[in-house]
Length: 253
Length: 369
Image (cartoon, rainbow over all chains, first blue to last red; front, side, top):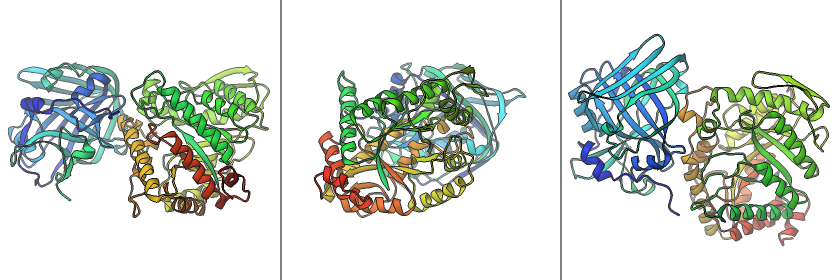
């Protein structure tokens, strides 16, 4: 019996969201004192398989991650990034597959796509920290995509937080091949909180889920952190149509 | 040094009517053989919702069947998840006492708290609370077993005074163990006078340090029970075959299958930021260790797969760092055919066990000297 793997048609999915990546030779970026709001939410297990490429297999239970990151400074100026991701595993490693990301800075969108394969679309991304909650929102084409809140803020240690490395579906400009680019940032935490997760609104179709497969089930957790993020060199890429055990290529030491 | 076997009860898809029955029957057959061969303990985990990885949600039933079909092997109920939403403490005391009676005093009791969001979330458990509830329950359990009447008012559970029945057959009570996965849990075990039931193995150096620490601390422990159970067990894979290549090939397939399955599970720490779970727990840790740098055949340090000489060397190394017992995982997803699993047990008993024992029972049973 073959292992349970994702069922996403990568070529079809790429038409709507994947960008060109300029080889895999990017230099690292450090994003100082970024604010990160992160929500984990269980999703429908069977439908969730349709949101993962065939490279990956699902977590049990399936879950999605919603993230808003505000970077006050970067080599192309400040930007805010919102992401909708489905967690899975590439081989034995836990990884997030990014369905869609939204960014409010055109230069950042271009650089993130060309250097790390981020499937970015234009969008207004906001993070608002209030005394009793932290709110993250994404608006694209004048329509709300995501509204989420972290309630009952409580201090924790940054050591308690684990963000997954992510997989970005992109087309390599050199050979035209569709690839999954693994991006594994490092985080140095200055502040961390945990709270009760609440999703007020989600338009999953705006995130590429045109089949209606992203069905929210049981909320898990939410965290808010301030951290330095090191976006590293790209180390691995995967063939989106083959299991990671067979289709992974190392591109940098 | 003694040897046990350890069950997750892993069931491959597709799940047809007979699939689970076949796996359970295979496990029971292995346990009966292990009993004949002189393995001294059989352990079965408690897991819930872990598709394919472990269909062992009612280990007390499986272990009772084991007890009924064997004569000598001790029955390791562990770990029992000591979280009231999973197992009410009164039921733990009653159930284990009954198992001890029907097994004729062969029960060992392993305690723990679950390490996956898959399970904790399924029972609506707050991961921040599990260590505290575990601690409360392990302090209560021996009293529930040994006192005629027992009442309790605690943080996570309470009960008015009642007589908890039956009482265990072993006096004063069965040995108690703690599942040791996260770094430092061996200290929790030592401080409470409980056995260290290692569910990861790490390097020999790391294990030696842990054992040394455990034995130092347990000398001044405040035992939760009526006696101190100073024992260190660790877990390992076993596939032993007289032909090196076959032993390594089958064994590596077992490792790979286990790793793939374990990867699917959602560790508490991955999903839910909490200091209550400082490491990813058993599954990813064991997975990483089993995928570590290997020898000439690509077999990671200390893994008991390959020919008898290699397996013997691994076991001797564990003995040298102070481990009292190794509990072996024999299969995953039935990737090794049942006859090969049985033959592996026989080969181990014939060629490896005699190097650790004075008597010849195991070798004789396996057709050896």
